[in-house]
Length: 343
Image (cartoon, rainbow, N blue to C red; front, side, top):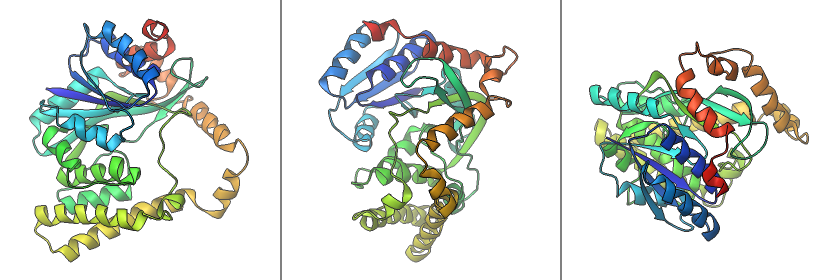
């Protein structure tokens, strides 16, 4: 029913940690791995796969040096299940949460995607294993407007990544069109597929524990907005992005090209305004320039969120939490190093 897509590059320890979790939770879904790693990490991963293949249904492909966008496009061509989901190698999509999303989509054909509750976590040490510093809520999209234009506007006014949601396969394939290619990772790997997903349908949030995203120094990050929009290719890349979204709005809503382009421009301006308002004020820039301040603020955030809330670490560790049973297998996979990494 569902295929899990994992794209990895030079993080064999994180990948093995994730696969060990799926083996421990008896994950029944097909797992497609696109590995863009160097030979050293490929060797480590292949050694682990020899021991995991009996427990998991894994399809492993080597794509050395390919981009996330191209790796995703290649994996899509191999998937035959009605549902698909993407997870980064350093994160956890919770096995039971995936099952609930599939069941929801089976019964609600007007939704293109679904997800549950999510947290971001950080360890006291940097790496794939260690003791937890804490957890904080991580926002995933809830998009339920009735028209494609309304959904796009709502999405870009309050942006969050849709790629971690369980999608219908036909929607996912349309999110990565073969005739659109970017040199800009922000547009190609994230913004275009995320915006297309909400144009194609509604996204539901379920009350289940679903995703854990790790906050660490090896994360793949998009450039800051100022650097991004000032790049030499930005205008041309944005034109490709806008034209594709406008084409889909025209096709679905039967509106003119001018109206569709105006909707995209207006919605995207609200996306840029949000980042400028939240991060680019003079006071914030001056404050952020203090050496080490970002690290300190991040630590304080986790300490604060550990004090209360259904998705705080103390609450998730309590047996009375409705999310406890789904949280603990991932927690153990993170705090107890896999023997596969050590071999």
